[in-house]
Length: 385
Image 1 (cartoon, rainbow, N blue to C red):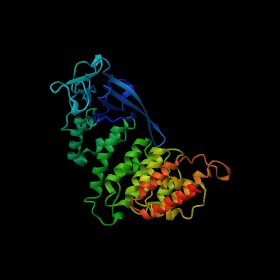
Image 2 (cartoon, one colour):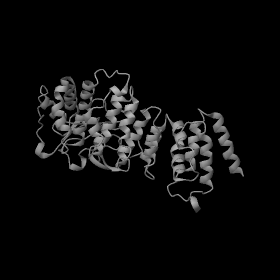
Image 3 (cartoon, rainbow, N blue to C red):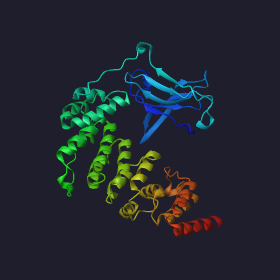
Image 4 (cartoon, rainbow, N blue to C red):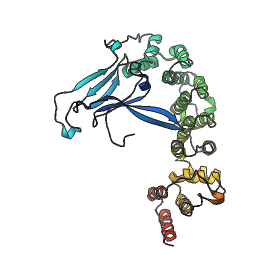
C-alpha cells in the first residue's frame, strides 16, 4: 500500500468499540510517519483492494513511534509507543521511556475485562469469539482438550449464519479436526477409500458465504494434503465452478499440493480465469508450479492464437519446463509484431510487458542455461534484423 517498509505490529480488529469502518479490518503501526492506520479492504476479483484510513496520528508529537497494536478483551485498542526522536534501533535517542495508549470510547472509558468460564464448553465457545487473541487462544486449547464433547456447541456456532464469518470459521477448524479423528482414527489407512472427509467440511464447501468455502479448502489441506492428496483433489473439484473468484483462487493455490493428477482440475479453473485479474493469474501459476508438464500435455495441441493459447502463454510465464524458453521467445515475437493489437487475432486481454517475458527467461537460466542461451540469441538476432 505505501511502498515503504515498516516492521512493526499488525492486528485484525474484531472488537466493536472503534468506528464501524475499522471492524474486521487490519490495523497497522508505522513508526516512521508516526501513525496507526487501518487498511479498509474490499473484495476485488480474486483478491482485494484497500484504502488507508488513519486511526492515530502523531502530527503534534513527533516522538510518537507506534511499534505494536493489540485488541483488549473489551474491544478497546492498546498501542505500544516506542517514544523516540528517531526511527531504527541504531539511532535511538531515548532508551528509558515508552508509553501505552488505550483507544476507546467515552462510554467505555472504564476498563472492564469480560469473564469467560473456560471450564465449560459454552464458556469456551463464547471466548472463541473474543476480540482478544489471548482469550481466543485459551478457548481454542480448551476446546481441543475437551474433544468430541464440544461438538454440539461448535455445530451450533458453525451453522449460525448470522454469526461473524471468522467465528464460524474457527468452529469449522475445530469441528473438522474432532470429526476427522473420530471417523478416521489414526488416519493411517493406506486406502483413501477407507477414509471420509468430515461432514461439516463437505457442507462448508457449499456454504452460502465464500469466506467459509475458502476456509473449507484450507481445512482440507490441513487434513489430507500430505498423506492423501487425492482426497484434496476431490475437495477442490467441488468448487471449480464456484461463482466466487476468491474461492477459485484458493482452489488454484491448493492444487500445488494435489499431487500429479491435477491437470484437468487446473484446466477447469484456468478456463474461468477473469481477464486482467492478477490475483487469479498468480494463484493459477502457484497451483501449476509442480505439474506444468502434465498441464501442457493435457492442453496439447493448442490452436495458435486461440483464447486457450493466449491464456496458457500468459500463465506459463512461471513454468520451469525446458521448452518454456522457446515458448516465451514465440510469445515475445508475437508481442513485438503487434499480433494481438489488430486483425483476426486482436485480443485486448493480452497485456504482458516484454520486460516481464525477459525477466521470466532470466529466472529460467539457472535451471535451463542452454535453452535460455538459445532463446536469448534468437531474440537478439530478430531484434538486430
